Length: 249
Length: 276
Image: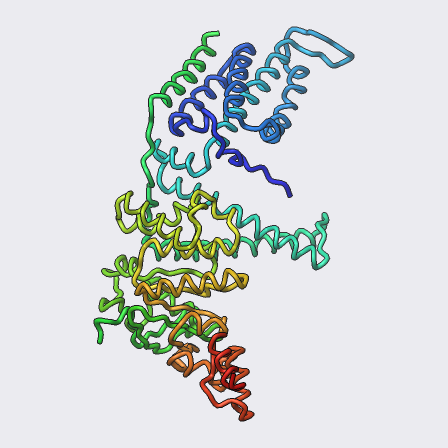
């Protein structure tokens, strides 16, 4: 099973990778908000162009970006296809009972462009710094400690859980099991998932013991301080300025 | 000689909530710089005993680290004194990067960032993983994860190390690397307790052996305990292959010297037999 790893290229060198994470997250979030509240297609298009420029600056490989973007595109495409024919308004084209409206086309394009631009910005956020760096930055921006720990441990153990799941699937396959749409198949899958949950619970106890044995008292060590430099602020101001310009187009 | 004792267990008993008796009046002690191998069949209580040594389980009886008994007040201190390496490294590597994992213990001890950094570098160097400090644990091989788990405890520089099956599932080269790591820590004065099923490695890992089957069955030097087929077989354990071979030669009156446990000892014994 192929899996997409958003932080695969988090170690490459680009102005966005070198950008201080807190400032990066705040600036990109403001830009994202500016794009998703855009009421006009030209505003959203301007936002999309800014997002594409940022992706180019980030030096994230084209195939990596495409691989990620196929999912938001597949999710948004039905809106572009359905809305022009379902929203009432000025008729642009008509064929039998099908009527394509200007307002529907406008809405479909707007949703599509806003969604693609926001997804590109999300990829930059997730893809230009390791996950733990992003989470630590969010913690320093005020995300509650328990939530930080949940995210960090979920990230660490989701891969092990996946490994366990793959082992279990291979084990089932080696005993001749094939997934079918039958009650027996559903029962066996349910039991396998239940076993996975029990194992996860046991592992969580073992991990907790390992944490306690190394002095854990409910708080994760915060690690080294993050330094904000003038260059980081300059990048931040530029992106926020772009967000403001989009609103005044 | 209580001053020299790194760890002392006195009449320790433990029963799990389902009524299973895991430990029954276990008593032993270990001096600074000594290495003890803990042997016993599955379900003998080895892991349960280890979990008592830094207060993760609390049974009846006493556990002392140095001369201080583990109790609620001393629990935090005890955990900084007894470094515990679990059997499955994935239980021990819970932080997003290797460096953060190795820093976890020292940071919890309240050390300064500079001191934490210095210890992380030192511990990773000890286990030969300095170049992988920024790696995510799930990108490491199993052998690397085992060594990484060891580093997470080394960085706390505890006077006592407790190791649960440190060589299990390792390839021969990784096993020998782990053995030399353990011995190196012992040479530095660390007291080490190792639970293992790997009887052929015991002579390389430890000076003393403790046979456990809920209670202590036997305790003594490697030579005293590991060559006794009766004891080992009663606990469904094997006699190490070299010892078994020379024991057979002894029984057939072909050999009369000391039973060897290590390759160099065996070569000496064979030379003696052949009078080279």
